[in-house]
Each structure stands twice: as structure tokens, then as C-alpha cells.
Amino acid sequence: PIDACPLAVEGINAMIPKIPRSKWGKQNAKREYPRQATLRIDHTGNDKFFFGTPPRVIPWFTEDLNNKPVKVPDGAFYQVNPGVAKELVNWLRQTLSEAPSEYFVDAYCGVGVFALLAAEFSQWVYGIESDTDSVKAAARNAREWGLENIVFARNTVEAGLEELLFNLDFPEKT
Image (cartoon, rainbow, N blue to C red; front, side):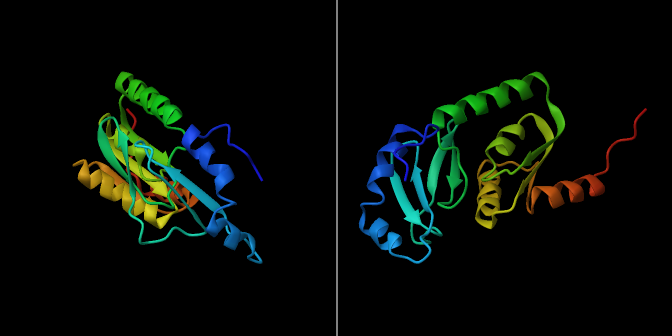
């Protein structure tokens, strides 16, 4: 049992001790193999939790990324600390604005946060993620943002990078 996560925001940490005492937490504890708990909180403070796989009846969260919406399925990875996520996003934006790239690969891309940002500064962006719902969300986010220079692939990073590198036509060196 844990009392708090040093990486998580206050809202998530406030939920942690309540989960085992909840109706669902007590039922989960009686299982022969208890399921993992997932805690979610969005940028508005809306929170929820579930055990095992996410229920399909609960709508996705909508997060805010530089004043643009990012759809996040309940079971998908998203930064647990919005302050840290904001710093990462600002760092990436600054770095890419100073040195735009022809190609940008977002390995373990989740719902495509870094890929979405890189599309502004890169000619071509490729996101690799093994979670099906995350890849669907990443592609949806790119469509909703009107981005056409992004491709998302459901694959392991190891296999996806190999496939990408063997199928990519790099310009001839001069």
C-alpha cells in the first residue's frame, strides 16, 4: 500500500488512500488476483478510477495542450503531473523552434502529445505506440488538429523503428 506518489499532482494523491476503502476497492481486494488500480484526473480537476481495464461506458478525458484539445482514453498513458508535462512541452517547443527537423519520431507516443507539437516544426512525424486505443486517439487528435504530416503506427518501438528505418527513403548525401 502507498500513501502518495511523489510524481503525481495533489488531486491524484488525495484519491490514493480512498481507493482501497471504496466499494470497488473492497471488491477488488477479495479477488484471487486483484486488478491494478488506475487513477485519472484531468486539467479541470475531474477525477475517476477503475480496476483492471477501463470501462467502455466512461467517456474519454479531454486534456489541454497549448490551448488545443487532446483526447485521452481512460487506459492510455498521459502525464500524471500537468506541471511537469507543461515543462516538457515547453522544452520541446523551444528546442524544435530553434532547430526544426525534417523527420521526428515519437517512440512510445501514447496519445501523440509530442508528435502533435513536433508537426509544427517537422516536415514529417511518425508516432509509434503498442496500445491500440492510444494509437486511435493519437490519429483522432491529429485529424482534429488538421495535421496531415503525421503517421501513427500500432507497433512495439523495437519493431516499429526497424520497419521505419528500412522503409524510409533518406536523401542521398552529397
